[in-house]
Length: 548
Image (cartoon, rainbow, N blue to C red; front, side, top):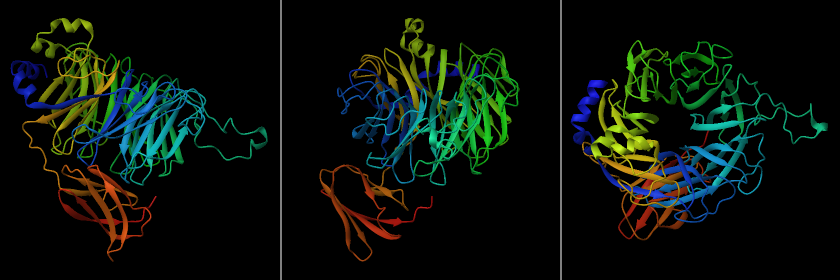
């Protein structure tokens, strides 16, 4: 990619200015707030997830319970607040992942050391546990679950599965725990195995650990994978055949479940499983240095792409890829069996950390991360910034062959750590992460020592999508549907009627996203009428029975 990046340097204005900043916003209290995930929502808005040390200050409307608390922001298309939610116990609660669910709600997943109390309903199992919380479309809690062993568990990601349940992915140092420590001695030997505890032995210091939940949060099964040393699961997806693809970091040699020898200090380790977690194939990828995988994704052609960063010298694979400076972004395109199709690296400066990867509808890829950006500094005349170790957000689009299409570097005068780069429904892009900077360069507001910082980009080459005036998502629906109103209004009402014309619900609305609970109605067709001071419209909603 060296010649390609020389070309990018020569024509930097073309690539940088092809994406305009539409707006940028900071969210937080007076202390530290850390963003870890973001997802687009059906109303052209987005939802942010992370953890907060702040009390009720700045833009935060709830107090702090203990150490870090889970903190969720639901925003509209312009970055204005729809609602926010804070959850926590007396210990630290680190929210790492959020996903939209089939019923229009959200599943929250992270790590907790808190015992029962405040918002935490169950005691901790060990040093830290998986903590999962299900919210409905209005942000109200439906259920929560604590899962772990006697040691350390770190939950990095959650995905909804096609059966209506969820798969949790992270790492564990715990061994087998047969029964809950809360059970009396009289009950030992007579109780059933508690599946919220670790049921398999540890392979090394840390292992991949996945846990399958049903739609209500009950544990269905769990699996452990690891070698002799440290194996850190960071990303997973359900594959088109119903199985799962897992990706993360390993410094284990051939041992335990690991069938390939280590290559460098640490390697990409990718595992393909069936629908019950049995290994179908696995591969290790890397150079002689340290190779950190952060994202794995099944592509439209049923192959895979994995992304991370590497500082390995020399050529990384027989298909190419080499580090130009310090550590670089590293993408590997794999076929359906894990064989390398192509390998590319991307250099921005001394230390480049890839954190986000999305496949677009045209089979190109949107790559996000952060870097000590030497090229951005040269363009801005800020060569002195190189020595300070300060990072910028990096957004990069590559085609299906891994060739750069455009890039955008966004930053402040401080440390900007991009966690998620996503497409929004209107054809724009959202960069979401954490910034500790005072107002400068691309950042206009500072609230605390660390803030959520979100930047909305508009691609000049892509027209913004015209939003429908009214939509229902999901539709068909089993529980909640969201009525999405595609225009601004001041006052309005929503009315749900059946085909006989009987009014089932009627209430005042004030938001462009209107969650409607359909769970109490039988299967059939219903009409939701939206009447505002601008116009009146109706939409047909199909109610189906949920099959868990």
